[in-house]
Image (cartoon, rainbow over all chains, first blue to last red; front, side, top):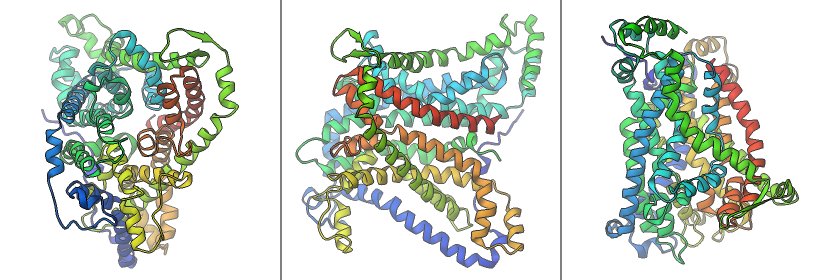
Length: 297
Length: 308
């Protein structure tokens, strides 16, 4: 039995020729390319500067005006990075926290989304609203009492506090994304499995979840990125040796007399790489998942 | 709705060991249990507890607390609340309108049939994909008063006569954080609005074109009405997120200079974790949430209408 999910259909469609534009085609092309160029400069020049600084020798980075086109490149900053054991520790922490968060988020949100999508029961709508609304509660406020809660339960400072917090915060979007996918799984499929004698658990795990594979990957990726990028929780809830990269980098590089900018840019580049790579690899699913809930065709 | 039928079928098979004696409702609650437990522990309880703490005088570093009624709120409304509200509003409006306009323009451009729009869309997502703290580091370096590239470029172009201390002057610092946040969020706007544009039936534009409508007229009478739903949601969501944004401001300015960029998120964080004053921090948080609640209510109303 094969079922194709109409995932992200609207996104993968490339822009093709538009016949109706013929009369003012040239003018609209010019306008479009102008917009793309101007916004492109705004969008890309900072990225260029990030990369350029990371490869610029210290003496050149700290001269003014800086040379916009590098005349000399160096890998020193990356070597120094690799030799810094604190940074390696932060990196390991980030990987642990993000991977566990991603796995936990997918499991918890898949069950929840399935319950929202395929069953009707009292309180369902209110719960869906609560889940949706919860991403709007200011985290700085939650953080204050969460600090006390984790402190009282002895979880403060460790990985658990971060993983539980991040998982919870990713649920609204993950549940929403996966619910959209479960909605597209035809009920007849579940009926068929049930008639064949499969239990509801079995139907869920062997029939429905595999169909939602791409969506679950997207949800997991989203959760990973959320955990990888978080600053305020990791800053507040962790011990120094359990800190993830974002607060770790702040502690390592900022607040001294003279910030080692090229080193910081090199470190920033390294921190961004997993996210950018994961994103490029799974762009289609992520964008599809992001827009699935928001755009109704 | 036909899920109910599935459920009925499953009920009928219960004799075959299919249902394990659980009704469908019970099964659904079982599925939701882990998620609900997390919500209760990480969001609901801390939230209720925070709202209660606003009525006490309590320190982060000393045990015990004293009930002070509305004193914390009175203190805040007597002074600190207003500049923070003003800063939050300025930041939120600026950091929502600017990426909305840029993202919309870019979405329109990419949807107009230019070549390589799929590739360009991917490229343009870069600033949004980069971790928030890295975004802040990067712009901190760009805005650097002594060695920053922004000063260098503007000097070269003759737009300024001497280096500007972008983050050292109140108005400039606010503009700087808005620019930074705009840079980080316009790609998201672009993706969402582009998705909306791609669902627009071409025939509408063709018909309008045949009727002699020019590009601007077609944008106003065809594109804008079609995009109303998605544009509204995207704008509102970004507004809500900016209303509680922390990272960029905290790393770039720390709320300074002289409190000029101190928004609710920064003020609550500082009061709690630097001033150790939980009573005032949570009271400020309560007032902040009250404002957010209005926004969230608007969002939920729209969202549930769309997804009904």
